[in-house]
Every structure is written in structure tokens, then in C-alpha cells.
Image (cartoon, rainbow over all chains, first blue to last red; front, side, top):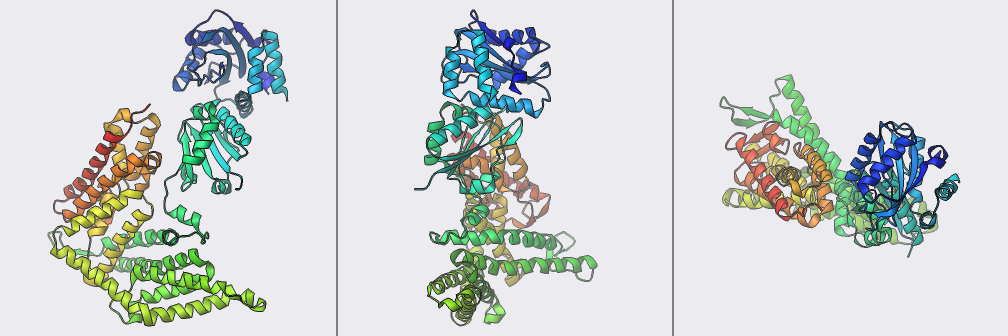
Length: 151
Length: 488
């Protein structure tokens, strides 16, 4: 199921963004660009609203911005790496570099939600996080995530 | 030491990511420490990995890493640690340790706690056995009490000015006859509840073989006719008989019986011997003294109320405080049972004119104070209540307005040191005022609504009752406002 939600073109590295707000905008327009959402503006608003409830900044430089929104065309996982450190109010106060962005359509079925819960759970695995942080290419990132969730 | 068992529930507002991350990190940290851990997730998928009642029962501690309100009734009487979901992700090790060491017992609601402790008689104390008995008795008290209250409303015959001139059923009408019958039905419940209580207290002490002796013994002790006394021995007698029967049976169980008769020991030998001994003990030794003592107590209570102006206020304050203290727990229920018992016993003994309304009126005036106080505080001190707390405060209003104290339990469980004094103070004010102002609560809803739904005699119609209750509510709300911490 995760394979359907995660494609090679879902990975992108960015080197100029410096703030959380810009990062969310970037993720949203990237999502529109690869055809996951209809309107980047709506998706951005959704992400922003979710952040307002509680920050999605996790620890060790990881964040999982996500939202359920009717503008989402198909459920997806996107991986966006920011080379610049981004302040995300994360749990350990560390700056964020890697975001697992999740897009969930309104009224989504159980299987997709389950896949998302699997991804969330995987982030607790420290060795996985370590290897994520050490990957330097988009292709390498794609392979690593594919491998993690293929079993 | 055996392996520690931990159960948890995680839930976040979106139910997509944090719920599962929190669950995963708790499970991982728990396993690394060698604990047995199971975490239920309540996310957008629904409930997964659901906890069974048995797992909750066996757990040493419950960890709730939640941002939304979940159904807490499963955890009553358990040690519960409630934190935000992020807390479980950030530092699961510290969370588990502090839960194991510091978690406080969640909203002991006598009933369940009593049952939970049933059968563990070895380390059982006096109060634990009493609570076991009360927990079995409460459903009967409530069922028969409500039936009595319904019938009671029809028993007041009034003159043209609307004052009650006589208490009794007009059985010349079909309705009056029906209500008279219902009144008898309720009385049956009140007659049975005392032996029932004693039976389960004894059961808590020594198991099933003790039930017969305790129930039969208590029935006799409470039956004025059999004793040839003026009144039955009531609760005092029940407690005495139940404990005597319980420990007698416990002793009888210790005798090394020959193997051949062992199968019949618990079902025949012990019940027979203990019932015989207890019945004789009640009939010839304690029955009459206990009955006279009860009689003396009720007479004393009446004299006290009639001769000392301050007595009703003091009793009202104490009863009110008891109601607010544990919100439906054993102390609260004791006050409730005491109020009902005093009312019904004195009605039976002196008639409606001489009945003692004080404890019952104080209980009912105090019963809605804690949940309504929370609600009022959440309106007056908005900044001190988080969004979820405001939701809980609104549901506390819903419960409080129909006279259910338990609505305040979530707040007491969260912050007992600040909340309980506020509840006790407000409830005591309501109880003291209602009793001191001479209100007579016959039946109805124990909240300001009682002025409309129920029958209450008071100096100024509607006003006195609502004033007494609302003063208590106000006191509780103000104390909460002064002491509660601001939302982080």
C-alpha cells in the first residue's frame, strides 16, 4: 500500500528555504506540481491549520506535516529534505531537515490510513532515522524509504 | 517481583500521525525496560489493538497519551497517568517511570473499586469490606429509592392553601392505591438492602459460605417484631453482624476437616453452623442492644435538631462536605444512604411531621455543586481552562443539572489537591444553607432544577432552594478560579 503512495518523484531536496511557513508553502506547491493535490493553496492552509493544533515537529530533525483535505487527489507520502535548518518548534527544539509530508483525501479508506500509521510508527526507529539523515541524494532517499516499507 | 504490566491509550487531534508515533515509542521504551506493555491507538482508523477489561484490570498503571477526550470509565479505580501525546514521543522512558511511580488513582467511584477489590480478603481492611457491601447495595438503594420518591409525591394531602396537612395515601382512588402499592414496593427494597449489604460484606471477608449467616442474621437484627424491640438495628447492626459472620466463617474454614467430608464443608457444614450461631447471637445477645442504640441515636438526632438551632446547620455542613469529597465514592454514598435512611426511618417512626429531613436535604442540595461549580468556573475564568477542559466542563453541567455528582470526577482526578477542597467547601455551603434555612427535600432532582422537578418545602418557594445550591456552586467556582493553574 505504501508503494502506491510513494513514488520516485515524491522526493525532493531544497537548499534555499529557511522558515517553517515557506517550507509548508514549498511542500504544498511541490504536491500540486507532482499532481497530488488540486490546489496548493488549500493544501497549504490545511497543513498550516494542523500545525496550529500541535506542531508536527518530531525529534532529531524530522517533521511530519500532514492534513486531511478535500483538495488532495490521492493519498501520498512526500519526502522533502531542507538543507537549511528550519525552526519547527520540534520536541527536542532541534531544527528540522527532513519532512515526511502526508496528504490524505477527505473520506479516505482504512488501508491508506493504516499505511500512514505504519510510516508514523517507523519514525520511532532510531537506526532508520540515522540512515535518513545520512542520505545525500534524492535517489538514495527514495531507495531507503522503499526498502524500509517493502517488508 | 513479577514483570510490570502497563497499558496505554494514544490519541491525537488528527488521529493520523502522533497517535501511532506515541504508541510505537511507548511500546519500544516499555519493551526495552522489560515491561509487558500494550498500547491501544484511537486514531482516524478507529480503535486498534484495543485493551480488554482483563488487561486493564491486571495492569500496574495506565498511561494515556491523548489530546482528545476519550471514554475514561474503563479506568475508574486504576492508577492513571494522563499526558499529551507528544510527551510519549519525546521522552517515553521518563514517562513510563513517572507513571509507575507517581500515577494517581483515577476517580474512585466506590462501586467499581469495591468490586475490583472483592475476594482479595487477605490484605482486606475494614473499609474495603464495607465498600464491597455498599457497591452491591447501591443499585437496590437507587431503584427502590426512586420508586419510593415517585410514590411519596402522591402521599402528601394538602389543604386549600397548598400546605401539607397529612401524610398518607388516599386509597379510595385507583391512583392512590397504585401509589400506596408502589410505596410498599420501595419499602421492600429498603428492607432487603440491609441484609444484602451485610451478605456482601461477609462475602468480601470470607467468601460465599459467609453470605447465609450474614444475611439471615442481619434480617433478624433489623426486624423489630422478631426482636420484640421498638425498631430494627439498621446499618449499625448490619455492620456488626456482617463482620462477626465473616470472621466466624473465616475461622471455621481454618479447621482441618477430614478429607471425606471436605466437599460438603463450604456448601453445607459452614453455612449451617455459622447461620445457627449468628442467628442465636443476634436473637439473644446483640439484637436488642443494637436496636435500642439505633432508636436512641434517632431520638437523639431529633432532639438535637429540635433543641439546638445550630444543629441542622452543622449536620448540613458535614453531610454536604461528605458529598463533595469523593463525588460518588464511598463517603458520598454514605452521606446519601444516611440521608435516605434517616428520612425513611424517621418517617416510619414519627410520621411525616416528625421526620428528620436534615441529612437528606443537605445531601441533595450538595449533590450538584461540584459539577456545576466546575462549569461556572469555566465560564468565569476562561483563561484557566483548556479547550478540552471546557468541553468536559460543559458535560459536567449536563450531569450536574440532573443531580449527578460524578460529572466532576475528571477534574478531581486530574488535579485532586486543588479541586477537592473547592468541591468540599462549596458542597458544605450548600448543605449548611439548605439545612439551616429549614428546607425540606421530599424527593426530586438534586440540583437547582429540583425546585421545579421534585417536591421541596421551603420558606420562599423556589428561591430558597435555588439560592442555597447556587451559593455552593459560586463558592466552588471562585475557589477553583483562585487556585487553578493557567493553561500552559
